[in-house]
Length: 225
Ligand SMILES: N[C@@H](CCC(=O)N[C@@H](CS)C(=O)NCC(=O)O)C(=O)O
Image 1 (cartoon, rainbow, N blue to C red):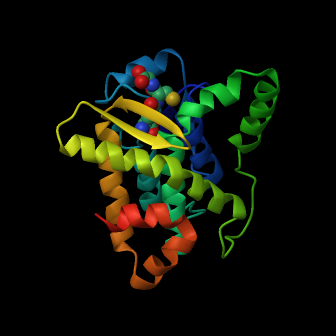
Image 2: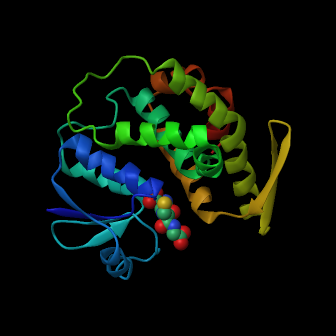
């Protein structure tokens, strides 16, 4: 049996918990004091932490989701079409590493958002009863999100990587008419390399579909690597 350690207020924990629920993989959910104990057994002190049936513990939601994909076949959450799977991977990274920034404001500053977001979270929280079939085309919403990610997050990844390679401590980039600066984030440098490696693994046919699928900002950045 798996044990998942997390907290209700942690978006990464909620993302991770939704996966075994949808996939109908049995697990035990623990929060509170148990989390502090689990955090002693992993390198980066962040939640969620997954304890495997064999007893080892690991964290970082995206790789954990892929371990579960490798270990369990039913109700996979990776689309069978490789180009759509790449789009899904890109949107996940965008949500994990960029949408966390606006999330806090949009979710909690205004009362209307507090009500709306609480309802939305409750809706996707348990998809174990959901039945469906993969669509052959991503939704219009997925395309639009990929474009927004290309106009902002792709530029962050590019600026972060260039600054890291030059040995700088900080980087700055301009998007949507605004300037944004932060300290180098090595984790995102690794993710850009990971996205480029996945992009390179796509066959010729799927790579040609990429500009229409993920937008030209992304295909330029990922093709460079
Ligand atoms: N890349 C990690 C990020 C996990 C993460 O940042 N979790 C937050 C809670 S939502 C945390 O534990 N923050 C504590 C800290 O940064 O000290 C993942 O995808 O699991």
